[in-house]
Image (cartoon, rainbow, N blue to C red; front, side):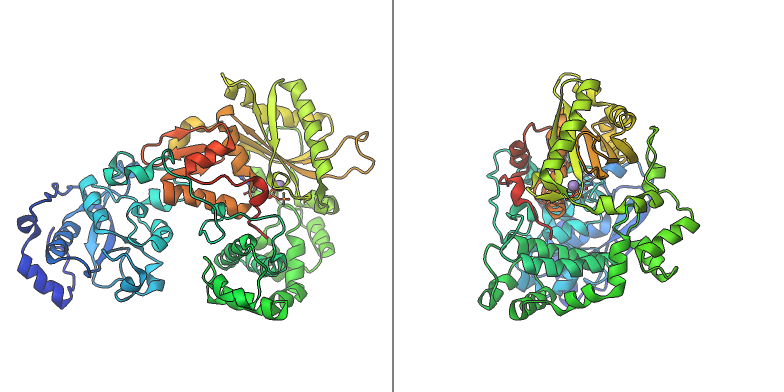
Length: 567
Ligand code: 8GT
Ligand code: MN
């Protein structure tokens, strides 16, 4: 196996290898384990940056890379194949770059920065430990450069490291050296929030920020990218917006240099910001806003069940331009149920919200909900719930919890106050409450009703820790002179996951995205609404307050009204 791959070694290395001989002879400290004798199912290509490595190490690493087949992850240990490590001669063709260089400037002498961001860049210990563990270990734990840690995680061939929701674990193979880093925040000083942080969950974003006008103009471009299906560009704008939302000073020309150094502000974003600071507006945002296509696609996607892809199809293939066109179209072409509906385990007499029905309710659903009405809706729902199952607890989450004066919908997390067998009290409650509210005339449609968690090997015992019901609600005739249909989301959480559900549903979206990313990249934890799991050994945490959650994640607690990281 040793000679199965003939890498085109660069001249100096070939010389060094000859000088130092075979690794098993020259390396006194390391005894490689017997290579696994299992068939290969894939190849992971490695490129070794030789700078800052002595001849012996280079030789050792080459030998390790050539001799071993590794499992991709522990969770795939029963898969028939293994992955073969292969050396390659250029960084371009590699999956993983191994280097002892820890400074950007130094690395750029060997690997272009843009290319480096597309790879996992790890220290030599990643290879040594992976071979020892006979598994491709999560690359993020061995990131060679701090500023490339996130992309190293994202590009790691280990699916546990790579997948946001994979939930697998490198468990017992995690090296002792990374123990403290992978801990659950206990004993680790919480990271202080600052507007220069790379993570939105470490930046304080008020509802209205000093540069709100700029955030909104960038928000128009973001929305347009989303409508056109340009998701990665949309995400770049989303990231920039969330950085601007946290910037505590009014932007002017003298601050542009500082802003250019903030995370997620590349050249393109800086030019938009400069344009705004100079002229008070961004030309592209104005052009987009005036564009008939943007106006039509925006209007179409306000209808529940119509996403960006459908909106483009209606515009491009069917030539529709206005909501009236949509109404005609869906009258003559009976609409399919939204995908969500068919997949959800709806077992309730309440009708689903077809696109036709959503069109009919559009003016209602478009109207914002003032805080007082959010509270009234909550009280009415909880009064009905008390009759059905006494002793439930609830928290209004989403934009309301973040202090928004008006919301687009109402999100409520519900649990039961009995800790003992509390999940039995909550299990199946979603369906019962929805049926009761429908029978009372308070719920008119149910779009989705189901357990929340996607199937996940690690979460089999967690099946019922969350259930959610996405519905349309209307106040009773005696409660409001003007009755408007409202979107109401009910999330039912077992008591042990009540607080993670509250944190997971408070938002904003970018804050949530980075909370999950931070947990994974910086703390070796998987955070979501149904709990916190340590990736190394699948240990689960069920914090009983929000501050405890932030503590476990090693983060300064940020109050909900400073989590407004989206435009
Ligand atoms: P708005 O309702 O006024 O528009 O504002 P919002 O309350 O911030 O938005 P939202 O769309 O209602 O979402 C509330 C929060 O719940 C967001 O942070 C979002 O990330 C989160 N959220 C969903 N759907 C789901 C879901 O299926 N699972 C989890 N865990 N969170 C979700 O919107
Ligand atoms: Mn909401």
